Image (tube, rainbow, N blue to C red; front, side, top):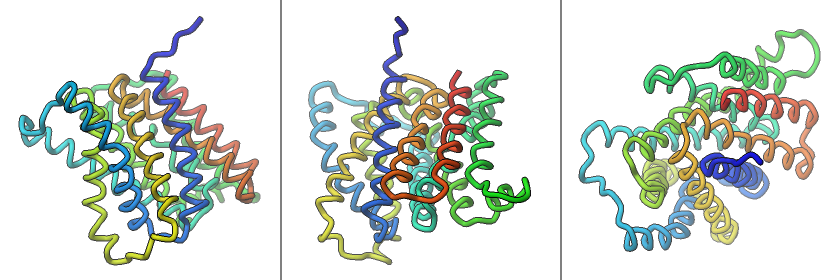
Length: 293
């Protein structure tokens, strides 16, 4: 019997939570600006999460930020900014593209995580991990393929707005994932402190942009509250995963959320080219799986 480490198990749970959340964004919140959506959902997520954080602080006590120097503060602030940028870019990609097209491209995050860890954290690439990068990149090609010249998908990925936004978002998520690993492992922050810090930080960064394009949300407030619960759960299990395993292991597993989002998008929303995009998502999963070996 093969025992799965807790960190990997948490990453698998996070993949299902985030995949369902991505589908929900496209299904129920497409008419809201990404900035407004982020602020309201994060506010709801903070309210969901605060009882757990407060209970943990009273019971165990958590390391305060007051002991941090400039470099530690830089990791926290940089991770918050990267997360906010990645989220806004992804929401924008979803608003102009189909979820089953955007998601496989956006979820090649490990392709960016590994080089960052190699350059700055001395992570070593194995031949299988190199192969994983190639396979995951191939997923972008397949997601863009229709008919005609073999070069057409490459041109589309380079020029299509949804693909460009999804790729840029993936790069920002790569920085964010490595930052989460540093915060939770090297800096020793507990998830119960890190999650509200991240949620509040992203809310503060995005709020000035949201105020410029604010729209009423009262009509769908129960949906926002439910989405906030999903985000609180997703961030918690994601933090538990990054706390226990390297970013190059947790990130590939968490980003298999692409399969969940693509399947739901194809079946429920009846998006076009479902079979092709399912192959793309499967390739992305295979690629990131090799990266995790």
